Image (cartoon, rainbow, N blue to C red; front, side, top):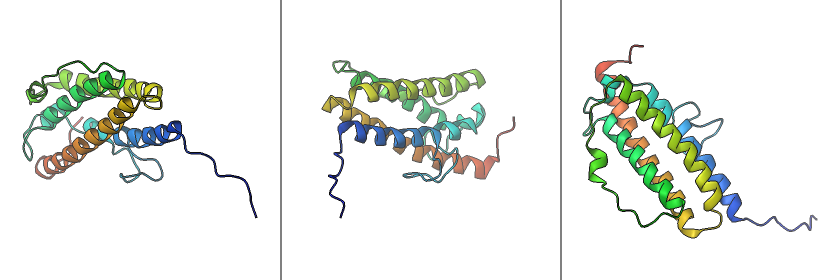
Length: 168
């Protein structure tokens, strides 16, 4: 009989697993995902498949561009929170104002979201294991982004059904 005591689950272990799901949300799942099928079907992969024109079209409510702008805004707000900057007031309504993007704006918005993903991973790794409010923010950013990934997927499917795939 093995008498080795089980290893302890630490805050660091939990954060590492949370970051795996965080990456899945943005980059897609590897062999087995927590909530996505394997493949590049995370937020960034989904956005890359749409042209600026498609992203600007209303679909099941607001455009994909509006959701992407809101996600970028929220990623910045969560990043600040996770880093301990918790006295900032944000204009959340303003984060929904941009519904139409041109090609340059669309590329820049995707680049901005990717940059926030990378910065958040560092902030979560550093702060979440040692600060409960930062850990709360890490779970919050994952949950919020996953929600918008689902909403964008619905819009993506609707756009593809009506318009067909983007042309390079």
